[in-house]
Each structure stands twice: as C-alpha cells, then as structure tokens.
Amino acid sequence: MGKAGKVLGQILTSYGISQGKLAEQLGIARSNVHRWVAEIRDPNSETVQGIITALKAINPDAADEFIGLYASGLAVGQDTFAEANSGAWINPVSGGLERLPDTEGLNVAALSRLFDKTTTSYKYVFFLSLLDILRRQNFDIDSTISLRDLLIEILVNAWYPHTYFKLSFGIQDKIAIKLDSLELDLDKPAFDELEKNLLREEISKRNLDNLLIGKDSLMRYVPFRLITPFLSQQLKAYKSQSRGTTRNDDIENEIITALAEQYFDTAKPLYKFNGNSPKLCKSIQLSSEWISYIRINYSIVRGWVSWKWLQYMQSKNPSTPAISNKLFPQIRRGALASQTKYWQKILEYTDEISCIYSNRPLRADSKLSLDHYLPWSFVAHDQIWNLVPTFSDVNSSKSKIIPSSVYFDSFVRVHYLGLKIWKEKMIKDKTLNRFIDMYISDLRLHTKDDLTDFEKLSKAYNSTFQPLLSLATSLGFEAGWNYSQN
Image (cartoon, rainbow, N blue to C red; front, side, top):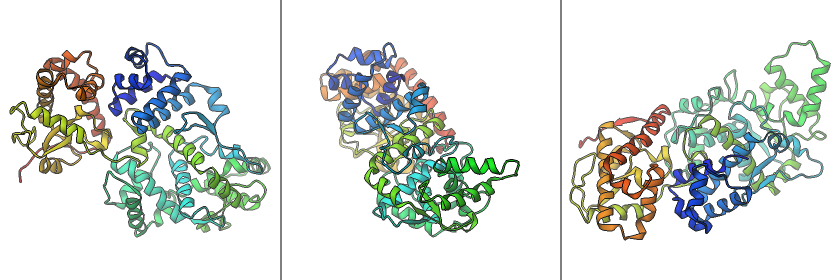
C-alpha cells in the first residue's frame, strides 16, 4: 500500500488544512492525524476512504489531489495492481477504485493500454483533446475531426499548466517549445471556457504548418501510435511477414494507416485516417461505436485519462506543489476575505507595521491588498503565512514576480509582529485558530509559543521558503522584483 500518511501531510500543507480541522471532520483525536502525517502509523484502506470523505467536506480540490497522489503511490507500489488494472483509476467522486466499463463488441482492454510505454505527454493531451472536441460536437456519431483542430485543442490544454504554472512536460516533450514559439498572450488565472475559446481563436490565426507536418511536428507520431493497442495482432503478423525488411518511423505510420483502414470494422480501432498515406492525412474518422461508448461513459473515461496524465506530470514535477490544481483549470483564486479580516484586526492594535515593499504605513482603515509573496501561480494556494499586507498599486506592480531577497527579512518580521499581537490581544478569538494552525503545521513548528519566538519563526520561514524559491526560479518564474514608485 502507498504511504497514505505521507501523501496526507503534503495535502494538508498545500491546502492550508490543519490537522485539528481534519480530525474534527473525522470525529477522531488530533493525535491520530498527527501519527499518520508523521508516518508513525499509516491509515488502513477503510480509514483512507474516510479521509477522502472528510477532505471533500473541507476542500474538494484537496480531496481530488489526495486521491491522485495516493492512487499514484498504489500504481507504483503494487506491481500486480499496475499489471492487472491498467484500465483502473481512483474515482474522485466516490474515492473508490474503478475500471473502464466493458461492453460487448469493443476491445476495452485495448483502450486501457493506450498509455503503455509513454515517454512524453503527447498521448494524454491528444486523447483529452479528442474527448473535448467530441463533447463540443455533442458526440455526433459521424464525427470527423481534423488534425489541425486536434492540434489547436492540444495547445489549448497544454497552455494552462505550461504558461501559467511553468510545469515541465518532460525532457523529450516539445509541447512547451511549440507553445512558446507562438508567443501567445493570454495570462489569466481564472482560465474558464471563455478564455479557452479566446485562446482557440488566437491559435487558429497562426501558421501551424510546422506543427502539423515535418520532422518536428507534434502530430508526426501520436495519432498513429495511439491506436496501436487495437491493432496489436495485425501489427505482429505484419512484422512477422516482413522480417528482415528495414523499417523506419514513417513506414511504421504507413503500416498503421493501412491497417486502421483495413480492420476498421473488425478490430475496431478508435478511428481511421482520411488518407491512404500519413502525409495525406488531414483528419480522422471516429468509430461510431466508440463514440457511443464514450458518450455513455464520458465522466469515467475522462476521469481515467485525467488520472493517467496527472500521474505522468507528477513524475516530471516531483517537487512542485498542488499539481492537480495546476494541470486542470478548475480553480479560481480566492477572494481572501477572511485573510484580509485577520490582518485588519492585527492593524487595529499596532501602528508598527508598514508595507514591506513601499515602506508606507499600514492602518486598519487602509484599503489593504494581500500579496502572495511566493506567487499564487506557483503555490496555487492562499495560506496566511505566504500573504503579506500591502496596497493595491504595489501588488499590481509586483504581479506574479518573485520579490528581491532584500524584502525577505521584513516579510518574516511582519508575520512575527502579527503573531505577537495575536498572542497578546487576540488569543481568545477562536475564529483565528485555523490561521494559527496553518503557521504551526505548514512551517513545521511545534507549539504556539514558537510563533512568537523570532529566532524559531525566522528559521522555520527560511527552511520552508528557500527550497521553494529555488524551485520557482528553476521553473522559470521571474525573480528579483523591486518596488519603484514611478
């Protein structure tokens, strides 16, 4: 079994959920949660189900990511599971293990092997894009989809995790390079269907010929290789007959194109091509039977491929927090209302706190703007320990750039002053408990007294932030921002 406790610890930290809050939701003592997170004792499978249910009640996104990380551990840690259940996945709704539904006349086992021996993201994004287009076409059983439209959808799906969150797609993967070459300018954290439509329109205006055809084309291999599980017997027979004949990748594509056409009604691959040569193929024609299958089982099929892609991207970004939030545009930045109220309460008791960037004094009646010191587009959360009060013009100027290191000591001191005031003036305010628990658990402190020990707090901030700052800059986030009043 995978280390559920270790995964749980990552999730609680990423989403700012205190151990006490989870224990309360589970109806157990906090010490039990601490034992799991500290990896003293791992929860059993029944308890894991309870954890998933509790996390859903607290934060559905946290539950989804826990499922993905835990399932990834299962797949890696149990060979028999991985071998026997390649079509299995963890349902984010129920939290249980599911399989792709079988149906008479279709080779679902072949479908479950689509992502075997995958070394790049192409197959995952290609199939997700195929599902997106099918859904927009209302699962028309006569669906023919152009490779150009598929390419555009691939770029749309890859844009969010690459451009906004700087995720790596792998050393061999060229999607990021191709996206950068288009110089697209759409940088919004709330990436909903409207923004996706705008992005599709923008990409469709570009010359995509070099991405569609040629040696470095994104579509050179994946449309052909994706359907090989459906034609495995035919390919094996063909290779046996042509033993000794020299073949290259282009010839392999030719063979697959011919076999997909020849066995379209018998082996029933997902689709066939509209041309008898890869160089002449401009579109794919989907099997009406597979379209019906996908329509009926859409949520299951999409959940399965999303889980597979999540596993792949986790393997390429092992140190990056909140992968699922950065892979799928499901979340929007929070309004920060409760965090703002916390700082306003702090400022009611002191006039010693100033904006760390502009040195302008902050007051309770100031129009506060909370800045994510580590950019939201990197951490994908709104934990109180990463937020610092400032003014809207300063915050807008900083945007998602990592500030210069000259501000770090002031950043820590502002939090120290806030926590000191909390202890002296606000310690009986139970509404602030969740923020205080975040400081303790996420910064790996031991007691509430540690929060007002500047040396311990500063050491905790440094040990937490320095690795994250190094990772963010290595991923390509701009750093070294300094405030200028001009």
